[in-house]
Image 1: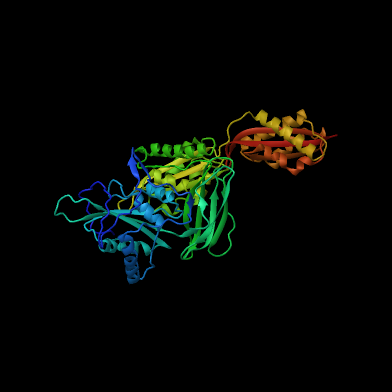
Image 2: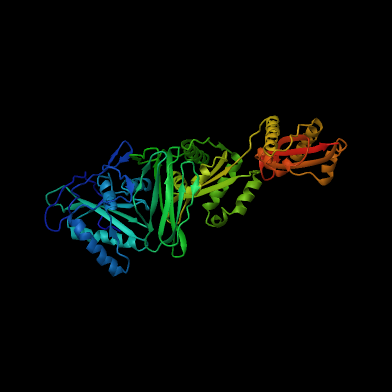
Length: 547
């Protein structure tokens, strides 16, 4: 929207103060960031808090004096809300004053700069231009058009701007001013300030209110471990939640949503450092991504495992079968005709069944972005999706990636992550011994007599478990009777507990194990199960009273 762009030459930025009526003044306390060795480093000190008190202020200049009035005039003429000038956004604009070209900083760089100055809301949009004028009035008129256009869809629009007069190339060349405009919605207000970094064991209160048309706020706090907290909120616009840095260093994610025009939407999503330092620079370009789909998919696996390593969790194993399902979903998401139903539970279940994959635990993440790194960052920044990545109970992952071209000609990469738990093959004799010991302890705690292992009952239990594994489920009543018929002469009563599980020791919690009996048999066999997957434990506990 900024007009009169001059991109033919990009002169080195020299900060000059143009003294005189109506000319554009550069910020007198300018602290621009620097680009070096592939990274961007801010020049100003980082904000200690979100919602700093006192708030940052825009430095005095002719542009600062002229711009608010022009924004108000154009906004009222257009019938839209009047955006407010923001000290934080002036700081963002100033941070990019020496940006090496007129291409707006990438999404990750703009977000880094926004958090650096203490903004908790959506990242700023940064626009750069060279205008053939040194008049603050002309520059204000030009910038106001972009600000008003942005305000039409914002809940609480804010802006900040800075400018610098460029040296003339020739004596008779027209004056040129480099201008930077930072725009952002400010859908929440944080009050009192929330520290951007907490020490281990430290807690802080995150409170404030949603702005504009937003109401009914919800707060989601994702701890370093991935555990998600959703504290209750009172009706209205205010919110409040405790943010606690526990014993493990890493990042805490905070997400605020609210109802806008009848729909719940995300309003803010930002990190708080826990027992660790926040980065002081941001890379300008990501590592070159592989060109092939398998390479992209393995790249996502590496990024997920990096998150798990930071949370002191074991890495996930790659699963080809799950990966084939995920790739099919990713390709469907890039197909307009199939995207609406691509991630439905029915479609996912059908795909898993066709691939022969069964698991008691299945989580699915999916996102899209201009690059695979951007799509993955959106998942990492979402508390619910991050919780899937950091779930301690999953141990395998399949990833699908697909790149499609949208109607506007831009490339969009879809990624799908399917997390599952596959039981490992183990020595079932050790599991059987653990079950016998746990049953003995349970009966001791319940103050009932112990049940020693009986060789005959043990033989029946193990054979029963083996046949269940072959059948991939319970046996018929007829076969059940046949299995225990051989021990009825020895025991007055015989009782069974049978089932398939991924956690065999959970069977020790059964109340029936406290019933009367003086003999016990335990059988454990691993096998496939149609819902629980490979290496499911088939557990049989037989107990009775001798005649």
